[in-house]
Image (cartoon, rainbow, N blue to C red; front, top):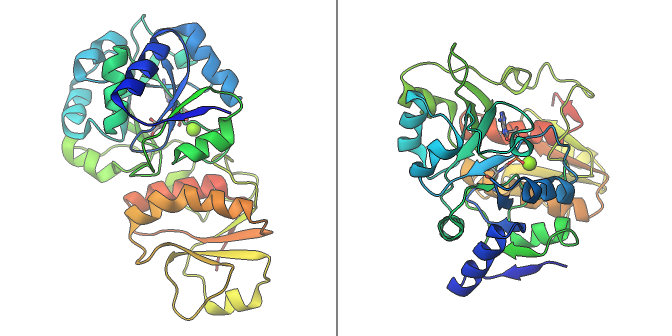
Amino acid sequence: MSRIHRGTPRNLARLARLLRAGELVAVPTETVYGLAANALDAPACRQIFAAKGRPAHDPLIVHLHSLAQLADVAEPNADALKLARKFWPGPLTLVLPKKPAVPDIVTAGLPSVAVRIPSHPLFRRLLKLAGVPLAAPSANPFGYVSPTTAQHVQSGLGRKIRHILDGGPCAIGLESTILDLRDPRGPRLLRPGAVTKSEIERVLGRKIRGPKKRAARGVAQLAPGMLARHYSPRTPITLHRRRISRAAVEQGTDRAAWVFLAKPQGVAGKNIFWLDPHGALPGVARRLFHLLRRLDEKGFARLHVELASGGGLADAINDRLLRAAATVDGT
Ligand code: TXA
Ligand code: MG
């Protein structure tokens, strides 16, 4: 099993030394826990792929301590600097042309690199002490739900890695927004997150394009088999575009769990769950992965989960739910 370290000054200094020496350390961020290695050390980064069982064609995000490091790894443009000033440190990842110092293993051979400055205070201290950029994807076995506590990391990767820095539960709970800034036709959102499309548009003063394939088109066009399965619990999930009705719950079996956005009125039972007492989206986002993991351990035959509405953070929540789900129910 790996060791879970509290963020004492001594532990942070030691973990920074280990990172500089080419070891892996799982780290807390404001979004989800990451599995970090020195981004300029190719053999160290190769171990990330091995530990996660991640295919080599899936590139890593490079985390920086400060804007001064940006030019070491990427070629920023005017839009990048505008967004960096507004949203960093924070949950926004920018895809930019890469600098030669970044090894191919980090970018999966692409000429671009994904970068962000995270805001979690312990990770920031570690980045500062390490003095190098840290490559880190989410700290979960490939294809499973991202971890939002040190215990989640332990249960998924405990046998594969030696060190986990405990920074408490992640404040946001969903992976960062990813924005591609390389296309001359304009920025494109690659993954929705807590920094929303409209917030980005406000800062840039123009419209940005959505993800290429699905997500933006909404639930209606999705069919089983079309979904890019990811972030998936083992238990099958049915998503509900509208509020789950009492009748649906009453007609269901005990082997199904029902997950509401807000605490439901007039339904109760061991198989009834909700993500936020009032259905507030930040609370829903923060608890989503944790609840999916908990329910996965309870042995239900199926999870029924309500989709969020209203755009913004709801887009990010629904994106993760769509990737986790196998089928979409119209009711
Ligand atoms: O919040 C987050 O983004 C967390 C924390 C640890 O920072 N990281 C994370 O990484 O969720 P993850 O597992 O999603 O992996 C990074 C993803 C890749 O799957 C890919 O979609 C995108 O970032 N990415 C990385 N480099 C890219 C590149 N050069 N071009 C396009 N997309 C890239
Ligand atoms: Mg991931």
